[in-house]
Length: 122
Image (tube, rainbow, N blue to C red; front, side, top):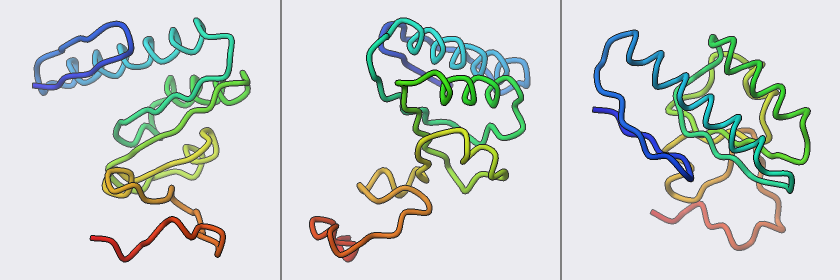
């Protein structure tokens, strides 16, 4: 069973079939675009999803949102993306495990000014 939520519409799409996966992805995409379209002020959108590098609709939507300022789109992925194009279409990308412990996004190099972050924490 897969669950997803947006700020307004909790939903549940059951099944492991390709059709159910496509339906979940379509619902997430529509909700993402609606949320961005309804907000004229700067908003931050965090999309927690698998690698969508090969999903042309998602890639187009992410590119559109990047160009349609003032929105910031962030991604959290289960593993590094298969395409640098995906990384280029969003503000920051985290791996799920890094985001869960408060770590830095992929490609971020901490500086001495990042004194409040202690990478030795368990």
